[in-house]
Amino acid sequence: MVSLSAGGTRDWLRNNIQPSAGAITSSLQFGANVATKGFFQINTQANFNWVAADPAAIGTTRNISVNVQPAFVWKQPNVQVSPVISVVQGRTLLASGVFTSNTLTGQYGGRFQWTLPKWLKTSKLAVQGSYNQNRDDVAHTDLPTRQLIGIWTFNLSHKKTF
Image (tube, rainbow, N blue to C red):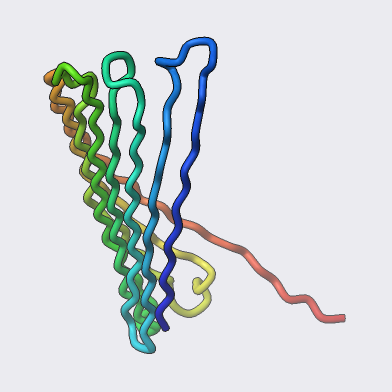
């Protein structure tokens, strides 16, 4: 099964009191989801946003983000593996050629989940982790962060008959 999506917006902000504060914001979104009869599925999204404003006062801004998340689901032994890759690049440029913002953010990680067998089948063990890289060329910073979390969910259900 395949589903595709596309969309776009355009907004005009006209400031009659301070004309240099007016701006036009536009965006395009695209997505695709694929689910096979087997164990593989993938979800992808891409977004493009840009602002056209007074080049000397506000500048032009653009953001591009891409998100890819495949998933591998096996019914036996009831395991799911879901890696994630997300990249966002943003930049604001004035007419003078000066950047007021120039960032690149990447997230790479994923999730492993296992449903326990037999009488513990309502329990799930999951491990989720990511590595984030946040780079700002204007502020000259490069901040990597790592996250790792373990989750155990347990649902207690009881059927009572009268």
